Each structure stands twice: as structure tokens, then as C-alpha cells.
Amino acid sequence: MLRDIAVKKEDSGPDGPVVARVEPDSPEERAGLQRGDVITKVEETVVRNTAEVNEILSKYQVKDRVTLQVNRGGEEDIPVTVDVQQTV
Image (cartoon, rainbow, N blue to C red; front, top):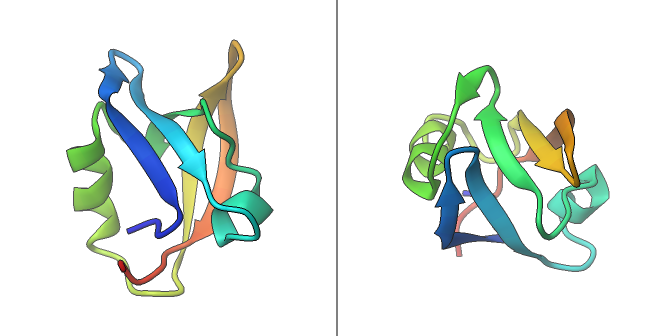
């Protein structure tokens, strides 16, 4: 549902799915989401894999704003707010 990120399914670990790619000039890039970020929460819900992220995001409408909590380089719970996009 976040159109321009790719999450590495094989890298989903105990902390959550790892962002593999963020497209240039995407809402995700503008929000500050980075390659290597580990998504730990969508809104206030803990996520452990890509399926859980997609399940939660499927409940939102296109253009809704969603806050993700990510771990980045040892720093935890960095909030990143992105616009939900239509899947391609």
C-alpha cells in the first residue's frame, strides 16, 4: 500500500520488516523513510512482517496519512508519516 517502498520479506526479523528500497521523489522519501529502516509499528500497532503492514494499511483510504515507527541505525521509534498510495 505504500506505493514506492519495497520491503525485504527475507529480512523480516523479530523487530519487523526491513525497507529495501524507497523511490526518489516519492511520498515516502519526502517523509524521511530510508532504505534499511525497520518498520516496527503502523500507527500504534506492532508489526513483525510485510503481511501485517499490508493488512493494516488496507484499512486506510488513498491519501490518508499514516505514521510508521521505524528503527534506524540503532535509534528506535523514529516517527515517519507517509501518505497511503494506490497500489500499482
